Amino acid sequence: MSNKISIDIYQILKMSGLKLEETINQSIQSKLNNEAIVKQFGTHSRVAAAVIKKLQNTVETVSIPLNFPTKNDVANATKINIQTEEKVDQIDEKVDELLIALKELKQLASKGGNQNG
Image (cartoon, rainbow, N blue to C red):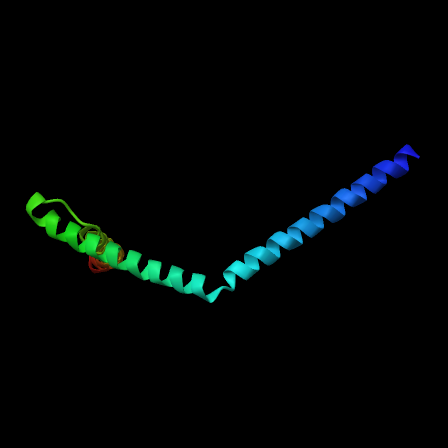
């Protein structure tokens, strides 16, 4: 009998939990489907974007006399650094090719000198 009661309590608890979850989900969905709330968030995000843009412009302006790099300065320096690394790698590959060609030429020259002597 005790086992049956504990199973019934578990079932009641489980069903209550599922009903509560469904009620909460419906409440969230009804709030998310509210067009006024969506418009309000859209307005707030546009205002926030404008404030952020103005702040970025202010930082750009202030950075000049204070002589510190901005986010754009760092991004541009990073791009230049990456381009430089790529060019150095290309030059390194060409130097390796030239060294191999020079080694082959030396070997051919030494073979030619041995045949003439």
